[in-house]
Length: 493
Image (cartoon, rainbow, N blue to C red; front, side, top):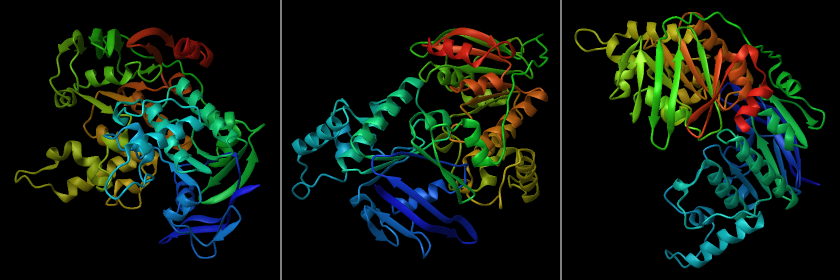
């Protein structure tokens, strides 16, 4: 029995048709996955379902048998539609109980009924067999537990449909398994789940139906049983992507970077490795293994307690990331939205910002010609798809945003580029473009450290791979002599 039907739904933004005549059907208690590339129209469809944006005239939304031309956010919530966005939209300074009850608790005007708030939170957690301390502040929780809070908030709002937008992007494999199990628990309670993800192994693991959208058009809805990752990738992109391990010839003479016995209390311990010009060195392992913490020390953001870092054989002790940048090290962090981009600023500003001083003339003023030449050259070199470089960077797809971040750091002319989970939230076409960029840079002599928890990513795009667990390197593999199974066993053992 259908809970939600979308009929002949379109949405146009100015001259851009984001959705074209899309039909969509979701049954009660069904786990349905929505897939498509960046900019395919997935987010627009979710915003229409949740009432954030109205569809164009002629569209129809049917919820529990009732027909609507469009929904408001209040109507959508009242009908039991709850969206858990990738950023979770929680209040970090409030407790678990306060977050679950936020917007739902109605006590005496201006006076909170704390007993009612705790009872509401306890009831929501009990419904899906979750146990969290209601008095813990959300900022003190892991990402996985924050997601549980967001799900409980949806349950407290009497959700009949929970929409999860990239829910596993920042989780470990164990946490992913727990979330997928919880999704099945929601199904058993009769709650429908619309799951949006670029990780197709997870999609196919729990989905009953998969709907594919490409360029605003629904290609079809398919049974998940029997569907393969390759088929999904082809449907959403029109292309096939095949990768093989590479046995590239790396000059292993004088290393460009040497890390010897590097340690920082509570983060990583006794880390040693060499990095050579043109080499792509992978570091993989579960989240929390210390990978990012190690990268931040190499980039001068935190000081190690012991050990040394050498560049060209000379010991360096960076007091700040500014000194690391001057020494030729660039770092692309995992969270591009919070740490790499100024979303409301133009694409051009984001690219030029790290080198803006070098563009100033004798008077201290920046010449328009030098600015445009710099921005245009990097847009062309990295094939960033932009209609106008003066548009806000938030208007770009995830893959193109990541290319802007890479361009921004390449503008500093680094010798070492650290990429921390560079393809999180990027579709397969976007990923392939980033991989091509990395390979081209390495072929020109740039040394790359690629941090990722996706085993195929490090296996097929790195020369050497280190496994990291509990702050230590626990294994080393040459990519061309290894398999996904071998590396997976080392990671999850």
